[in-house]
Length: 116
Image (tube, rainbow, N blue to C red; front, side, top):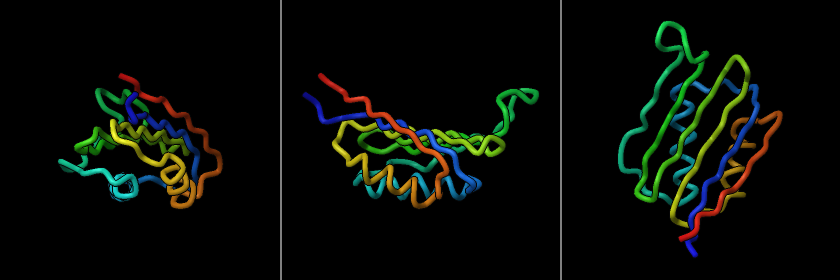
């Protein structure tokens, strides 16, 4: 059995997630999970392609053990965090960081365990 898993966190927050905030959040979560970043965070802003895609941002941080991604839609005050790793990490620590840092008004999460 592999210790890897995917943490999917959907949350609503009054905190506006800017590009700078998204970078800080992904770096903090990666540090708390004891992962090793391998590149800079890439960010895409929406809308794109003639106004398609709503208004929001997507941020992705690759690390040796896999990646973290954040999709945020400020008008809806909603975001989704994906944290994927083949290495064990404490999901409760990461969920606590999201709750505290973003002062979430509603949060739900799920864990998908990876097997060989």
